[in-house]
Length: 292
Image (cartoon, rainbow, N blue to C red; front, side):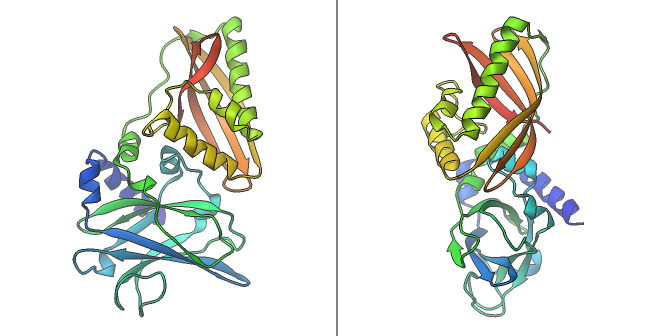
């Protein structure tokens, strides 16, 4: 049942993906601060306050955790422990920390998390009868009771627009010859190795100078700074590429593979498609996306 509700909410969210950034910022429903609670020997729980220009009926609120595909589109790693988590809208009995407004005001409650929860990103879909929003929280200290403000990443209409577009099919082409396959394959392995070693300089050098992420960030530099921050935040990263298939089309090579990412934080296993272009004697990543 929870999966069906989540799927329906995501579909509704995608239908509104063409709204402008101004329209999204004008929405009445506002997701507030997340209050992360830890108790010795018990799984952690979280409460998130909501506010609106008008009174909110807790029964009208629908909330779900975003799908792994939505996480990938937003450039986030999906925490597997969220698969069994439960998030619901409830009416608070008192002005408890983490809740917004007077008694009876709705608060989102996240439960059923693993006892030893690692740092993770929480991406949630929240809606009522008049508004719909996608909000991200970054839980960096799951061992500590504290407040976490919402990130602005999840509410960008550009992310939603990218998710709404169908994934491109593999373009027609010919199997890459050995003289192309060898260097392109080596470039992919060097990229994954630099990522695994947390060598941010080498990792970023594997991309074209104009690459700005998928969905696109404001600039290559903004994307690069974000990637540097995320990689350097980890003490351990391992990236393995399996079932690599290369197809050449003109001056580009399309690489399809399975990527297994593990770290001291989130881990995942994704099917990816990378477009490599030959520039200045090197094969560089021009585009990178997750394939369902």
